[in-house]
Amino acid sequence: MQRHFRFRIMVPSMSMAIALFLAGCGGGTIDKAVAELTAIDGSGVTGTVTFTRTGSGISIEAHVNGLPPGDHGFHIHEFGDCSAPDGSSAGGHFNPAGVAHAGPDSPVRHVGDLGNLSANAMGHGMVMRSDDLLSFEGENSILDRAVVIHLSADDFSTQPTGAAGARLACGVIKAAK
Image (cartoon, rainbow, N blue to C red; front, top):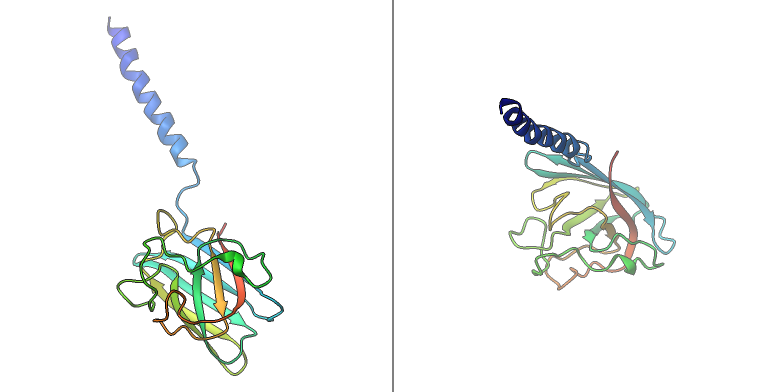
C-alpha cells in the first residue's frame, strides 16, 4: 500500500515538473523589438526604431534620416504591412480602445499616437521617450504592427490622423533576437 501511495504522489509531482520545464522552453518574455524603416514612394527616408521594455513601460529610441527639416508625425499603425507604394497597407493608427486621436502625453489616445519626430537641417530626426501604454503582449501589443513616419507634423487634434499627411517611411515591429 505504501508503494502505491508513493507512486500517486510522485506522478503529479513529475507531471508538474515536466509542465514547468516545458513552460520555461516557450521563449520567455520579449524585452526588445525593432522596426527597420524603409522609404515609401521614393522618399529616401530610412531609419531604425527600437522599443525596449523598462520598469516603467516601453522605451522608444528612433533615428531617422532623409527627412525634410521640421516636425513629422510618428505613429504605430494597425497592420504590419508596408507593401503598398503609398504605405496605405499599414492601415490607420493602432487604436485597440477605439478612442480619439491625441498627443502622446494625453491620458486618452490611440496606442499608436507617438507624437512628432523633429528633423534637423541635415534631415536627421531622433526621438527618445518612454511610453507606459505600449506593450509587447496583450491588447496593446505593438509587435507585428508598423511604424510610420509622415510628411507633416501631427497637430494632435484633427481626427483620426492628426493631419500628418503622406507617409514617408514604414517598418514592421519585430521582436529582437
